[in-house]
Image 1 (spheres, rainbow, N blue to C red):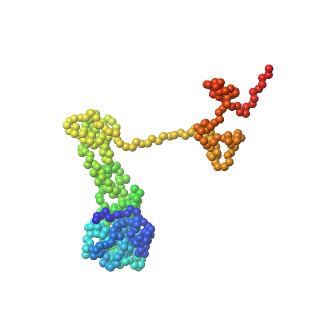
Image 2: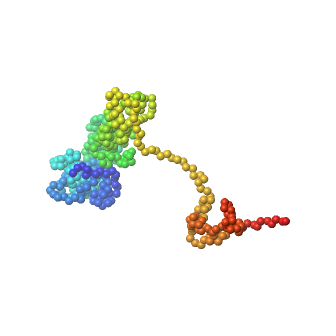
Image 3: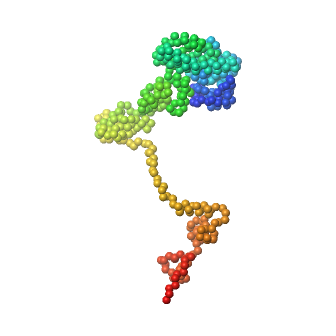
Length: 445
């Protein structure tokens, strides 16, 4: 087994939350079908598999607090079987705390190995019981005090002129302890601050310093990609990110575009860095300049995944794309004091841009075309045939047969006179019959 079983979700679900100690929404008893009940959620692929040896079953559970913003491991010493999504009461500092079961079974051992936590550590805290209604009421009351505690604690730190910022306050379910998460660039002497916090909130105070990335993960938000922040949904290990990762990927060093909501460089710059580094191994080293007959060619940019290197010649702004093999060949020739005639540039492969052509449709349609189409539609309608405008009977109207058939079935036209056809002129077409014409005038002698 490996950590590939740990599948993290990206979105949050408001319908499948837990209320009154029972999972709501899809009624799947904590095993949400979408796996998106809270932040940092993990889908247990082994939840439905039978256990062959109950004696070797993992008795440690992962419990999440404050909707997944904090997780810890607790040992189940009771005889009860807890399912994912249930609210349980666990040991706290001088009291108890209430959290949600986020992971059980064999996946807990993989997660503990990942975080270097011993399964049989003697100081591991225990699960007390399933959370009762009284425990949930206390949890709700103390969680409602956290927003006011953040505002008050920030005001107190400003009065003491401390260079720090209180990011979040997490109060234990029984209200006996409060953890203040703060951000500071330098070390802060908060001995006087702790005394004021203890007297103001009447709790046991614990100060915990976090970084800007951890603060963004606790606050949450939407990134420039349009999705929830990685640090608030699935990312738990924050690796260092520097501008070198952006240079390897040919990104412009623009601090406003490369920075996330935390003000630091985006964690996603490291996601594809290994792929770029593997591709850059194919490119030759020390190939910034090439000697050709026209002068010294300078390297402008690299197209990593097309394996092209772009050079520019002196006294010219035109860029020439070269294949990696051609660059290596020119470098070998330069080492032998041989200067080639030209660079041997190739055409950059890419899909040509489609040009937009403006088409003028004015005059494409006429009124006669529209009238003929309208007459054809009326002629094809079911019902008795309509009379034409010239009052001709229906049998003389044009039928819907093809034009060739109509020509073949036309009656032969008669000529002007009654002469037989062989006596007519061969090169003169017969004139159409005279219809509805007045008789010619009679000449007087």
